[in-house]
Length: 511
Image 1 (cartoon, rainbow, N blue to C red):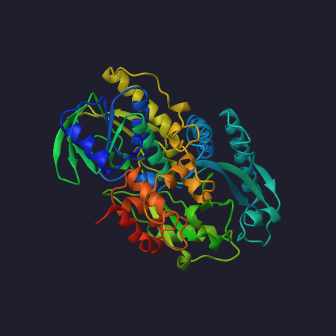
Image 2: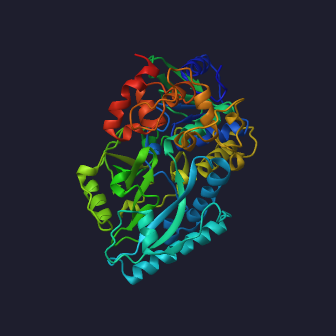
Image 3: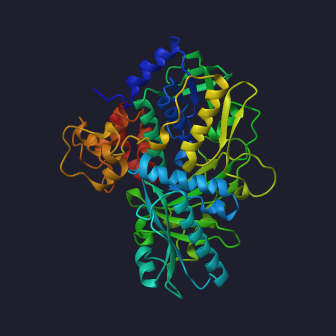
């Protein structure tokens, strides 16, 4: 018997049938990224009945293509946007200490002081880091959670980022920001916590013909279509929102990352942070990640035209990232060192001419001509605040009988404070990689496994065990091998790894 928070094919089938039979939820949320999942959680914890539908899978779109950073808003402070900077710092603290301390940790960011960085530029970075410390204090986040910034010597800089250039190295500036183990895992945790509070989370269900109180839904697995009525309909489809609300004016921006073996960077423990020449407070980051990888990113490029399901990096972006990071490395990296790459599209609100890097990351809640409510813009760090804003609007506009927002102090599944993590008897020792990905649910992943060899890796050299693949299907709503490889785990970011683990993933979804 699975827990009420468990998402799986059987639960999906039952809840979709109930919805087709005429159930009328208070809130219908369209979009299974971090914004939609956050709205579903906020609505469910206010006592509202809520259904979330997603035409693909949880975290299928932009929410899995981020830098995996929970930004404190320093960049926005530098451009004068004090409001979003402060909110970002506050939301970062909430995630790190209350909502998801198991998924968000402090990440050291090292700016190496090399001869190419002039005195004025060094002073600007140091001033920015001090402003970041002030933001942290203003947000009420303790230094024990996010350490203060400081100047370090060359020896420590090399220890943190072993491949940094030693020639003329004058130490470094070290600061800290929030770091997700994985963005898609955050989306799944939020969605499952919403399910824990009664939300219906239905993937592979497309929505069309939105009005303020209805939508046409189609089950992608069976082809069945039906109309559903709700007291409020919310379009949270991000960069695809314009397909459901033609009145929206969005200007997508593409952010690209490259994936390396961590050994190519000497297995760093800090994010090597290189200022982009000529840009105010913009950096390229080489960030140590799970599965023994380093992600190098990111770009900010206009992405006009049709919105693809899976955006692709351009050759120019790859060259830009390599050229920038190589200015700080002792040994140059080339395209031969790149194991994989990914790109995501930011759903920015069209502000006319100018660089997409200068467009505000503020979100907007908009009443569509159809009567539906759309939310666009925003950023991953602020998903909880965005959800609260949307629900406050929906409750007022539709006269919904809802309690106050509860998400500020709500622990997500996997947080030690969430009761869903508790099991009767836990194994005495668990792999650190498992704990990093599942937090307090790590023991449950192993204990609930029924497969053969649950503790074996899914492929040689990959620190994901077979029990995780099973858990993705029985508890996390994975319906096919792609859901397992590309979102519940991030094995698929490296095509060669994906190929090696594909047979194991297929074993758990059948076919």
